[in-house]
Length: 478
Image 1: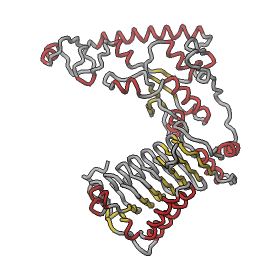
Image 2 (image 1 turned 90 degrees about the vertical axis):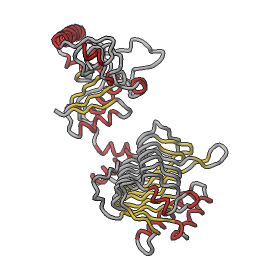
Image 3 (image 1 turned 120 degrees about the horizontal axis):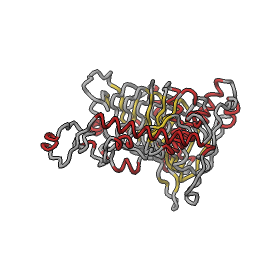
Image 4 (image 1 turned 90 degrees about the horizontal axis):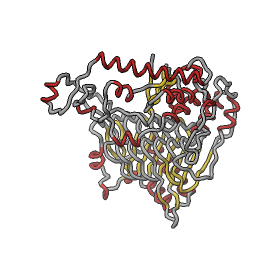
């Protein structure tokens, strides 16, 4: 059987559904309370979410998508008793795993030095004798005895099973399987003054038929615009894009969704991700990682917005903007973090600011315009498309400067813009569209500068195009 283990993170329900659709037999959720003895302290203290949240979210998402019977849901992370097992089963888990507690049963003292090969109880080490331990400078060493370790594990899990059987019987059921998803058997016993867990304990009806597809389309195709977005607003527009795609398949005809979001917005991950033809989004402020990834059409503009004194600021995007985008037009007035437009496969992108490095990796098609600094280590593995970079000798952005910015594995040519061909027409058209967006947002001076670039494009830009297929397999491009 195929088991896929993932940490509990935001949107874990969507992730679990994707794992199930990919054909896995088991989805294992690992909560933040666990961790190996070699884990770093910052990871133990700050990474991940409670496994209880992960199990509930995954269980509900799998049920809602009609996938719950396809996979088993396992969980682990800091489990310490039979009561913990019962709670996780009632929240939706099929099985519960123990790591640290089993290690303790065979003698682990949790000194958190597993990576040092100096485990003084003979578990996480290759040392197997007192003489070798003394030679390595260990002040204390107790070799592992396999028979004793097995006996301790049998004793521990045997006692755990007896306690579990008692709890299960007290709940009026005859099998632990009957507890899966029975959140109605749980109540919040303490801490109500600090957190309300009612939503976490709401039962889920397994086997309820999904609503008809046409109802889903009507409910999700509209986007609420005119408001400010925050990091909690993830994948804005993705649901509408899916509804549009379904409407085309089933011959429905909802109006194309368009929405503009208020100034000062900083949207969460995935803004306009998986966009499709007909989707039209604009935001004043910025967006986090993964925006416009794998886009199949549509438009999205991330523009600067006026601050308290009327100055236009931000307009930036996070990592991996337009990752693998195949179609559509996307405009970013500010900067972009690392790996912008990697695997760009046909979409058109304009960057008004500086890029954070590793841009245009494995680009296969499409057009990109960079009005700022394209960043270091660019165009690794680029095999198609064209990148226009605005000249700025004062910042070292000329032909020599671009060659210094190329990744070691880049096999590209650098030269002036082509004249009289579709690529040059695309440059003019994209810049004109960008200027119209700037004018519409009240930035006429910026728009005028962009229109001037169109008039002097031959002198204002350099192009980067693939020079041939990369055949040197010794050159790493990661």
